[in-house]
Image: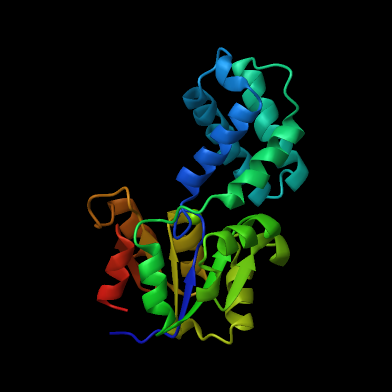
Length: 241
Ligand SMILES: [Mg+2]
């Protein structure tokens, strides 16, 4: 078994349960704006918002829009699509972002796995997100203490899967590629991103019953010199780390 020393974790939906925390913060904001008595259900609002948010984040990663545009447009477009009037998008975004990092739900098993691994390895975070928000998520959920350093795309000015953020994290941690492992929930961003700089990777896919790779995925990883694994439960990391 390969001996790793440095483990790099993605944050959102790998250790911090972004899906549930974001939904909860959005619902609190929705209710603070008295929208729950209107014609649009929160369920529809959440769905439409997430569709726009995902598309705009993709644009932001490609430098197609600024942070400020991302933050207001995602709500502008949601309100427009659902014909909700009279709500200020910027203020809605500010309220949502102030509530989000106060949420503390972690992915299943994350606290136990991090606590166990922190005694044996050097742990780090590599995350795409806004500096203040990501730091507060780590602090408020109590997992900050497990990580030696946190690398945030807004600071490094290169979001995953840009090789620059991975290389910056390796250098700044004095980590050798062959002794390092990237663990994340996004196939495109975490797995393929880490693979292209020569890091082994673990794809965390809690929604998948089988950990087998598809033919398309096998074609993507087939010729690479790095090792790719898939888990659907974080505790599986402890079986070989
Ligand atoms: Mg993620």
